[in-house]
Each structure stands twice: as C-alpha cells, then as structure tokens.
Length: 253
Image (tube, rainbow, N blue to C red; front, side, top):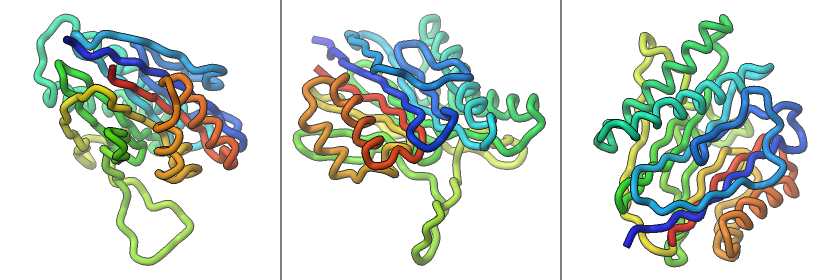
C-alpha cells in the first residue's frame, strides 16, 4: 500500500524585515519574486506513487537581491522537476543535477543584476518509492520526528569558529557560487519512510527564534500538517519574528 502525504506550507515576512527574501517549492508552485509571503497555510494531500520534491529557500544579499536569488532558485526547481514526468532518473543523480542547475540559475541572476552579493540557501525533501532523500546547501534545516525522537536530518554548512560570538558564522555552501570559483557539494542523505513520520523544512527564521525542544513540542502535539505549520510560524512571531520564516510540514500516513 502506498504512503499518503499530508503537507502544509506557510511563509511570513516576520515583524522586523520589510521584504520577504524566502521562497519555497510546494505542490509544483512557488512565490512570485516580489511577494509578502502567505496569509494562510497552503495544503496538499497526495498518494506517493511517484517522485515528489519540496523545498525551502532563504535568499541573501540585502536590498532586493535576496528575493531575486530565492525566486531564481525556486523557479529553476519548478522547471527542473518537470523532467521527472518524462524521464526515469536515479535519485542521487537527479538531486546533484538539480543542485547544479539551481545554482547556475542564481549565478545567472547575479550576472544579470551585476552583483556578487546575492545567494540563497536550499533544503529539500525528495520522496521516491518508499524512501525520502534530504538535500541541503546552507543552514536552512530538515527535521524528522519519528516515534518520539526528534532529529535534524540536514547539515549546517557553517564556518567553524573558536569561542563564542554573537555574529552568525559565514556559510560554507550555498546557491550562487560560480563554478569557476568553487564547486558546490550538497549534503544528500537517504531514509526509509515509516507510517507516522513527521518532517519539517524551514528557514533560519524559525530556528533562530525557537529551540529544537520548542519545535519538537509543537510538532508532537499538532494534529494536522496545517495546524503544525501555523503554530510554528505563530511561535516564531511571538518570540520576535526577527527574520522571514518559512516552513513546510509533512505527515506520512
């Protein structure tokens, strides 16, 4: 019997920033480049009979460059995943090729805008025939809640620093790196699906505001993906909402 995916997505500008530099890929769609997030969660319920990709992007660069980068990434993923309807592509090969294509799209946008300041993180879930792959570049995160165990699945690509500092460490991997200067190396991991699993993709607008314990508590007690997404964003806003916050919540039924 195939698994059923109950999923919800919510994106909020937050309480401090004037513009939204986050974007996402959900149910085959993304936000426009100039956007104010979503007023309410968007949801979907799908039987996992074929490949399905979901992702969160957190743009960087200030001014309007951040939203340009995250939109270029989300728009490219939208185009790239359409190939899955026409071709059988091994999962890891697809994810690696997708990361390269999305990175090229952000680099092309840099050149179009004559700047080297823009980039974006990416974290994605790729469902395929009873398995799920996690893929990320940067510090946007993926979590799984299974049988009461809350686990971060992604890897934070952050420069290691000695001692404590208030300033966030620079990213060692992200979208928008010219292939001439540096080769992007996405983290990719494979896991088997299990009934009752709950997954979360999020930008650091959530994880900078809430501890893992607080996220775990909300995910454990929410009855639906939609309720969970709303409560996570509401909690981040209550803690200050200092950044844009985007979440995608998935329940495996």
